[in-house]
Image (cartoon, rainbow, N blue to C red; front, side, top):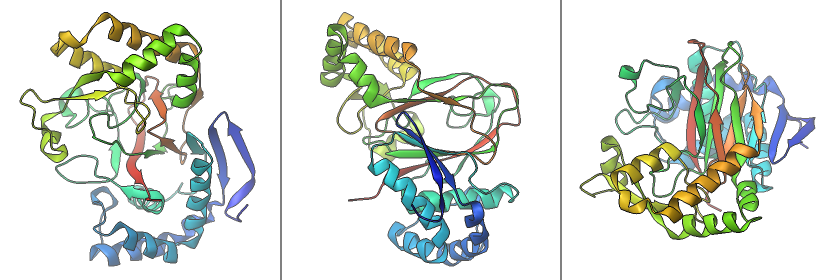
Length: 322
């Protein structure tokens, strides 16, 4: 095991917990210089956009931040071995300015894959997740809410959703809520296949395309031209294994009730029952904690919270080509 990873590596089901050498944050000055050189001047971490040449920036970061590269190499090994998620309780960024924390997790994500913009207007990669009043939520009624986020997968409307996303906690909720939850979707599928009802659900949700509404701001970006703003995709497939946002699925069935057949209803209820009965990973991501999740093969969620100071960073990214 490399020097950047402590000897204690704890397996939590298929969620892996890593202890890392936090001294990689000493490379912060090199990171600032590398980003300034690449983007043509000092740039705010809040406005970083996807690099024009991801491989070029990745090469520069590996050269200027060898300690971070060692950390990301070990993270990649865990996913190559089948982990559905990796959690690091102390990443090593505590005490840095928030914008330096943004830049650091951006660099970590770039070393692991090709980062994507989180919305189509400002093209920012790093999304600051804070609870906002409903009328102030510009793109997501879900991510910026303090209510419970039931088990789901991200980017369900994307033709092929990003393989991974990360969450970094600047300020964890202090109210006892905001607990992150994770379920390995491969285990959920195995549970379904244990019963006749479950096997039927897998068949129905693999073979049947269901309507999903594409928000207007995203239709041009993803090439969707249907007049009513809906696309039609299966809940289960090979890539991704799961495409699950129960609220969005219900929205589509309400708009297109011809798809809400008894077989479809039974299949959706069967999955919901399995998700409700079998607990997976549950943990409040602490300050300076990081979690990276395999979005193709896992469900994630979050309990409700009341702390208005809760502040996380989120980045989505595609896996590197083999």
